Image 1 (cartoon, helix red, strand yellow):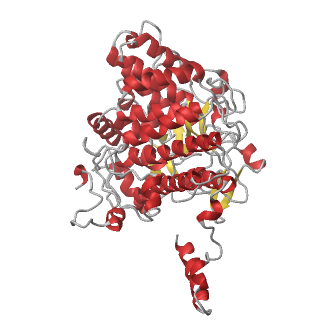
Image 2 (cartoon, rainbow, N blue to C red):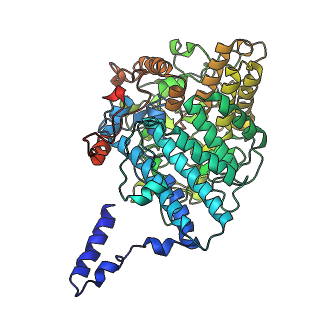
Image 3 (spheres, one colour):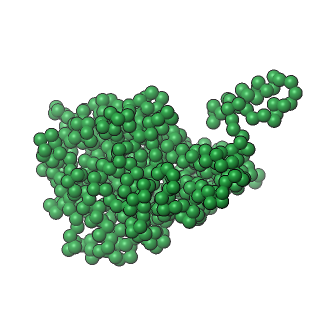
Length: 584
């Protein structure tokens, strides 16, 4: 915005130096006025612009993949790096965040800038006379899908009554609309998605990156589940599983090889529902939002050592002799599968006598374990083991093969930030299946719920998902099996729900989901789980000693103070934005 203002002021000053008042009726150089865009070509540009914010570089807190708010705040990972870098994240990981934290501002701006782009396109399109009604309906479906997504991203962090809903009518009437918060905007989000469901085709007729009917269904189900409305979400989730279509038009199914979901070479595959499209082209938009979250120094990416998986997450992959997880968290009282050591070849050592789910080394980089096709990690890949631990992020990090093909590099944006052409799945089948399992369990359909869980576990056990050393032996003591029908999860609702929740933790680890799941399951549950996480993690990383988790009432984060100040007060002296009660 600052650069646009400078351009406008320069053009205005040049105009003022000329004779007459003609300058008052001319657009400044470098700008495009609304009239020039009010046609099919202009609208198409505005629609692409609305998609574009999904991979823009507003800030690391803005990314829809939520490695900060979903991952770090949820206990999947520690901040990593060193204590002096990105101080706002220190407050995030120690649950001492305040309304002045700049990562909150990033997320708030992401939601509203995204909605603004959608609103502008909708307003301009309403006056475009050369567009057919069918095309207008299609594009409106895409734009309202995107607007719902942007607002949902904000609501997940700030809560549904903290954010006013600004639509195209209000946005076009006022250049700077001011609306009071305090009204639940979930109904507005659902209304947008309902329109998209009716308007969008089963498969996007053009680019695979566009929203589809299945994507709109999946987004609605995600929103309903976040609202706690399982009854409405359940038939939608079932429909997606039975008839859903991938971006390329394939029938949805689990990929045998989990790596296919995290590679630029196999993107938009059969497990995907909606992906954010990235590239390393002229715009250098190779997922800037995750550019801090790569291994440090000589590792892939080369910067900056953030988003290090937690000891608690790593040890939750321990399994019993039957290849099943510890549903009562018994792993927290057992020896750690990986210990930090000194005077050894690596900064940590793995205990290969402890059996682990193979998804551990798919989601987490561990020393002595091959890191994708990069070989064994080097010690300097971790920036400060005292601050962040000894583990590495892995899922979103590009492979050596991708780097060699020009699909990942170490100096993408501004000459320093790592970037990748790897798409990331915002909506996917594995998430849908586990959400559906929750709905089934809620209705006491326990066997059917565990069927969904077992499909996920059966895929994890496939040979494609086992990591081997150069000599052909497994890199760890891998063991994962399906729940037998005699397990208590098939007859006891509470045990079934525990199994599903654990499966989400294991399957979706490091994908920015964890905190939002904890919130869905209730403030008391969130507080209990984060209390246990901190009690465990402080045994290995001492900065967590004395840290307390968010209270059960704080299922949302505070509104950025800058936004409250910017909107100011109405004519009666009342603030437009009121901080949620738990944060006052």
